[in-house]
Image (tube, rainbow, N blue to C red; front, side, top):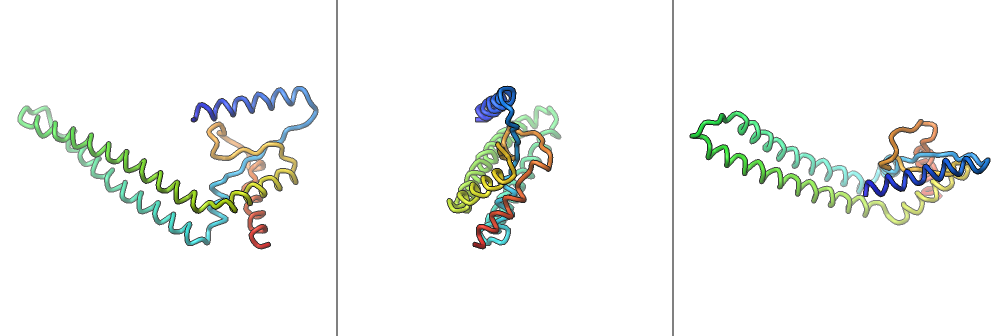
Length: 177
């Protein structure tokens, strides 16, 4: 998936460069931080607060398991190669492997649950209005391309091309109409 994004980004960059060589039209680029827009727009939402609470709860749960794992690893490293402790060391190895596997699976499950909750929160209406807002800001300010800030290929951008705040303001205007 990441490689596909990189390929798309590289292709888009190549098209932009070639397009600029063949035409007089200036390509202007903007960036929008969808997470920031989403969080700002739903700041007062009970559903968003519930999502934040759930995320913190999950993180605390994982932190507890990670602390246990750290303690097991510390105990394992303190046991010397004493033949009398061989069995205990082997049991610690199994416990560490089991707990590591459990943490990995729990992390995967928690991320999936949070993604589902976030998708539920991000309604079709919001997505349509977000698209309208991005289009309106882009057209009115002359941007020809808008990238998402969370795109893998983007490493840095100047604050002047970040239209997130303008999109947020437009969404608030749409919701008040």
